Image 1 (tube, rainbow, N blue to C red):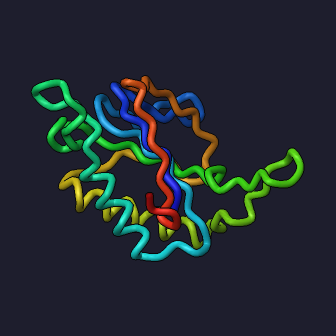
Image 2 (image 1 turned 90 degrees about the vertical axis):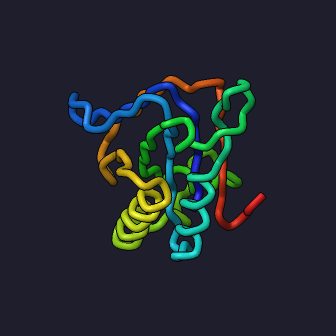
Length: 150
């Protein structure tokens, strides 16, 4: 799994002109699922995101997690995070999981993240043409890959 995490002051998803999900302060998580992903990848990433200390604490230091910041999470599926760009100019998405594999893993990730956060998670609509709007706070943007844990 690959994720781009953005600390936001607000974010939303619009589908066919209708806002279908929105948050205020929190994390916008763009999530790419690949064929090789497992329950262990889901567990590692969900736990890491729930405990990621990228919000300001009382002293203004980046030392608080999303729960301490009273933030929310918005997760949007994004297969393009698995784009291979080594050859040519047209990205290949061969590593991105096909919907029959990706959807159950995506939904399992959402449930795991909700369990870690102790509350519901806003979400995009898997496979839909979504317009994602955000105000990146900081800016703080972090990239994670469960196959290359740094």
